[in-house]
Length: 200
Image (cartoon, rainbow, N blue to C red; front, top):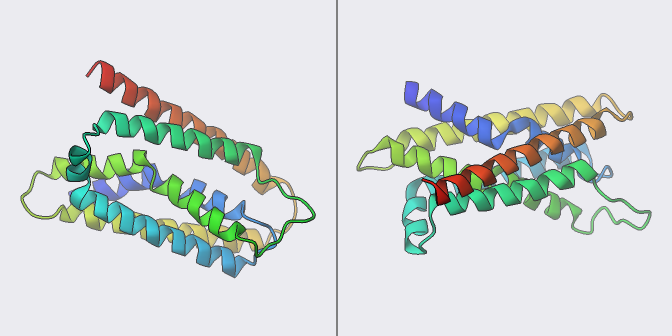
């Protein structure tokens, strides 16, 4: 039981449900709350599939291509920094913006890239390797599934709450603050990966 709880907590930390919810809230304001909830759910289900595949065969795939975990973590840091800058700057809107012109898809992809970043995948692979069992990493797979389920519930709650509080600059300010957090987290991933690559 402890292994499941530890895995769930670790995955919640790297997925970061609050930032995921902030990214969904930052999508085109023309979208309805229901659409944002569905987009968030779709994105997290894609994330779940990616993370489960990584847990089962990630180490083998990286070894096949000759990619070290350290290099993979460094790349994850770079991706997180890019996503953080997007949150910090905020979405660029113009009068000619078409709500149905694919902004939803781009928002889903940004969320997938964040929640299933190389840093997150590195965590999954590391936890799976640490399990040290001949069979599938059951604890990691269940813990990851629980973490994604909790994230979906938090996203739905954040969207529902924001619907009852229309207007104001609160969501935008919070999104920019979380952007700084994501950038810092990305830099940390990058530096740790480089350190382990050159020193470890």
